[in-house]
Length: 374
Image (spheres, rainbow, N blue to C red):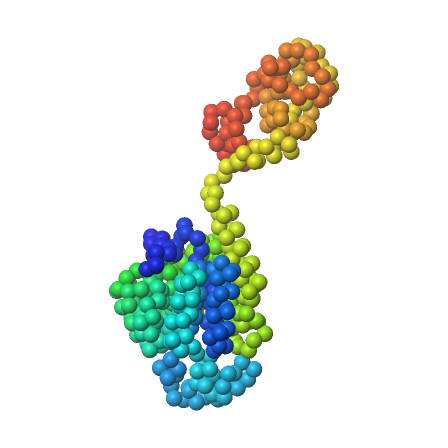
């Protein structure tokens, strides 16, 4: 299994490494490079790993009919779809400026290039990784062009069955296998019941590649949960204001939500560090305070044979654990004892009717007791 992809800068994306958190600025900069710069700064402040933009050459992307198609409404930036798209586009010089800014802030800069012209521009810009949106997973000519660039590829899998993912990977694998898949539902916004976080593990098992999550939900819970389920990348759209015009803002995180998501993902990662059940020293101290010990329920003379009625369990847990209760029943007292005095092994001769408990989950022979046997 390919567990990791190493970027040219040395940053590693993969299972067992810190989650690669991507603030997808996309076109939420509204075509304003000053706003785009502000968003890069704010994303860096939140603690993300990377910022991602979108790049289009409108003439390479759209037919003449598509360029001149009327485009009106609350989210329109121009009377035709071509003018709308052009209004949201940043120049390649702007992109170079944003890349330099991101790298100054120790962020990875990359884009999803929506056409062959933009893809060639990203190669000239020497981006570390190429992103393919779910819309372009089926665009084999563009996939071949990207694969031949021999850069790592992040591939979103929304809108596609596995058969289409197979075809895309077949083209990339002709050149390299530095691929990270992103589970995605391309609904904007996506209802929680359609997210399907368990698909992350299905993709890992099917393709033996690093798998992440590109989320379009309105909240942050599923994105955080995806990390516990093995997502090595989390990509979320980012906006400075959800009330701005545009189709992506409602499925984007505002600055406070981005802060919260990054913090919670890092909390989840720390919570996943311990892989096996263990008892920590702090728990041992807590057990002494909160657990109970076996005590005598009344004054009793030496030579007395203990019954259950002669014992009780009370805090603190600094004496014999109630786990030894059955062994103590039938024991003979070696000395006089007193009400609420903790039982000590030196005070009794065990009756020997029960197997002594030597530790959590074990018997005297050191074997783990079968589940359901206790």
